[in-house]
Length: 99
Image (cartoon, rainbow, N blue to C red; front, side, top):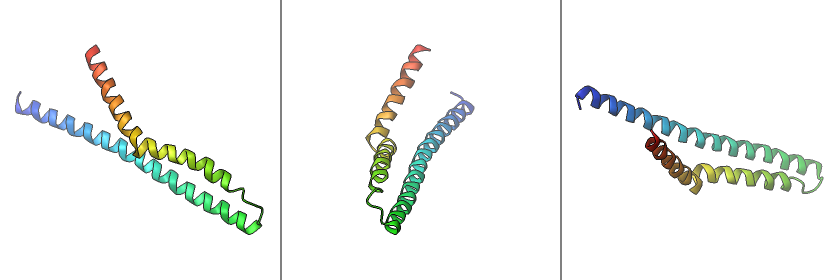
């Protein structure tokens, strides 16, 4: 392999790593934004409930949305992220074999 080809290979690998890192960072940022909005909206709902004294209704959006937030967190930060990575790697290998 010539030095020019080696540099191109290193550049391609570096670009691939940056692309993957950007994708992971975007998913983590998406989860952080989701969690922040969850917190802000639910604090507002609880404040409205305390002000109006209408009961314990905020528990329903807290729990319902909380389940969705937990699933999002597991997908981004937990075991599902590792599972997704393994599935993508297997799919890449399968597609390369077909070429």
